[in-house]
Length: 485
Image 1 (cartoon, rainbow, N blue to C red):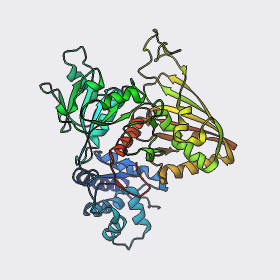
Image 2: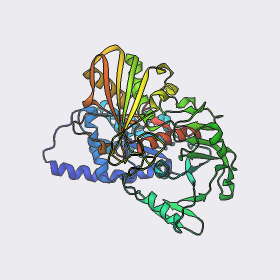
Image 3: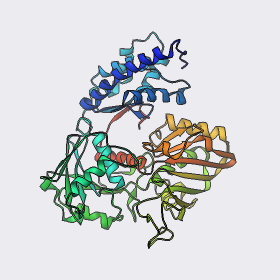
């Protein structure tokens, strides 16, 4: 793909701007009416501005060697909008490139209909909407709430129905909860509207009525009193991490299953979506979504393991501070964590290296790990120092992981960057489990050192959402079939 440069850049910009503007209602209608998610090489186009749509097109230059033009994608989007599509996820960029590679003489409507024939006329993603309850409303809880509302679509899949918290001391507790959802110092303002109904203890979020339930113990709640049934509870408190503790949720009336947003203990299944999500069975009532770091490193470890083999390795995590650290020096039960998080780099332990074995049994006993908490509020980095079974080079390793990131079933977990100017704040809002930084790769012989950025809040929350959809049985076909973000 090699599009010639325009004779008049400004005229070309205004024409493409107009096309991007006309694409927005098409993308919106497909999502709102048919639950069809449109993306551009993994970048979602739903609820995006004109500039966002144009930047998504320009991003393709990192993948295909030249940016994709709205002149090329607009007729493809028009053609697919005419189809009676079932609930699905379609990469418009991939579909457009496929059309371009098919030749200029093709009938675009016939081509798109042929490519998407398996996505036409299907059923809804679920027989009836799945009620979801958030137990806890901290950093991960609020981000998962944003994602649940964003992904409501036609309302046929997951529906956020309740949020369980402890009653705060302030008289305007509900208003404060709404404010924390509305404004976020790291992730910015919520893209939507929030109405507070104190008479019914309800937040109306983009039209979805979400009941705020005050409780101190999971088992004391009767969710059916609030019209919530067969609920999938997302426990994001971290208070209970084993089957006995999390089993309290199942004693509550109206609860069917539980997903933990922390590493599970004992025999609980720790799921890294994209790696072992097929281990989730219909009979499983309690599942863990593992940790943010485990989600970040396992996809790349799996890819490297499959091509090169791994004899041993060390994982060093440079992690943003978290809420369990002290803002200023004070007593803490953990070693070193009592020192001021905003002033110090703090060496601490991480269980991520050992947790890898739950998703990749082949690496059991082969990895060590440690962590350094640093004075940043979000975005972390994992450094993989690996001894391989086969030799490689910087160029070979980078190209292999670029292909994995862009053209494999792991494309929703691994993103790729070749920017020499990438820094941590550039990763805020990433929907991937990790972003592979190709410019930092060190590889010689059988040694490879790989650098992985990850938004330990939002990127992880996206992985949680994918687990939620799997547990609920949401089945959406994709185009291309092995490409889903």
